[in-house]
Length: 596
Image 1: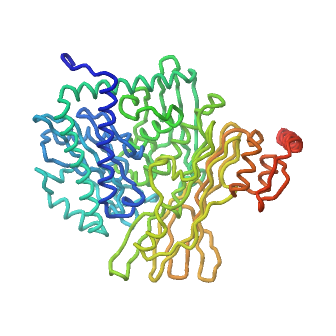
Image 2 (image 1 turned 30 degrees about the horizontal axis):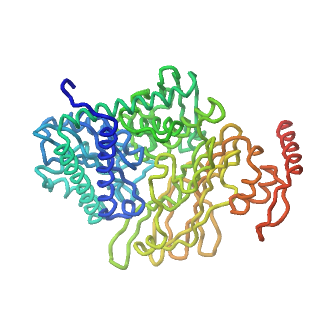
Image 3 (image 1 turned 120 degrees about the vertical axis):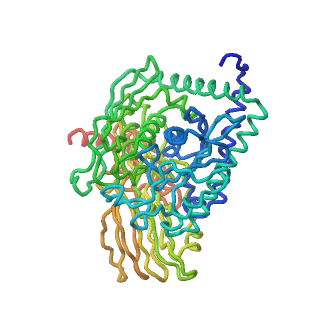
């Protein structure tokens, strides 16, 4: 950096926000031009900017599981294509070369200035269909990549001199069931990447290449200093965390996710040790390196200052150790990682953030709900209105967020790997676009784990076809091992699924599976609720009555779990806490718990 210009704090902040604004413009481009509902309603995609040496610089509101490993993909681009040129673009969805899982197609656009590769604009989008053997982008029971069946692009060039390489496009159109929708989504990704390229070029022209290079180095250094300061707030300690995935074929006791944390409070560093985990599994639950690293970082950042920059600079204070050949990040070919962004990823995030809660009251979080159940199913069939097949993933279920030391769990949490960034679908728009009907959609009382702070509630939904058969695939972990509370908090409600027959009878279905429906039949799904934080008997009695009035909890839970006595009725909003009676009831409940 000899001779680099000086950057004061104001210019540093201006440029940081400028790059974030570029990513937001990329995001808006993809959101408004994407064709599938999983993109233009649920927003299951992410954009980011990575430096020429593979350091994540800006990600705006990208899904953390998508963007935190973006540098792994650009590294494979540089290694496989050393002759990068202006106008190139690469299609990358290979989980063995830095991607998350097969369903996440990433478009990589190298950005040049004066003939030098300076940045890469990245647009990653979950596909409505990626060519899998079944009409689903998740294949939890796939024994390997071959049985999974999806198209695999190990960082393949798809544009040269700003023009499509038609061979690659034809391959996708031939193998993907909804070819026109895929191509529309692809064009949206290209648009986002090229917008990023153009805006980065304009920024360099305005401020000069030397200033931008100096900014990148100093912004990442500043971000590292912020992360170091945040980690110094924690004591030096060794922690362990574990969260078992529900039973799977060949794993009757479930699949444990084991995490070791070594926090160095003096140096402001943390080591996340994932080496003590099972070998790669003969199913699609294996985590790619990208997903394992992202899950580890998400779990740590969830326990720190939320205003920390999330980029390669702050990541320097977190070391993630992975054992090659393990299911948690040590993915080996040809093992499948079809479900790498959800099930075991969510268990990993929960293991990390719940482990931090052992530091003491005020630290860490409970486990967040992450059931990929009926409300997140991939549904498919034929639409008689246009004579065409359809495939799409809905995002309309409700998993409860984890309680923290300061707040109740979010209601619209989605799941740990994409908390707050994925949008909820519109019932009306889903019913307009696809031949299905959503019969009911509601939140369930008492489904959030009790605690001094309460976990978020679970949702229940029922839907079915209008006129022709419909198939739905869902992947609901947390049915046998629901999200756990911490520091005395209770677990959240468990996930479940059922098929409602034409005669109205409900037949339980496996939480991870699929169902075929004909008109008159319905599928019912319940997601999971978030775990609670702290002793429920320490919850503010006034908050308990608020929960009762809002319908978050039942009267029985208010008395028997939270130990609150009151006068008045819910119907006329006249509830008032009876202080002495509440104190006495809580003392008796504590005595009963101690005896147990």
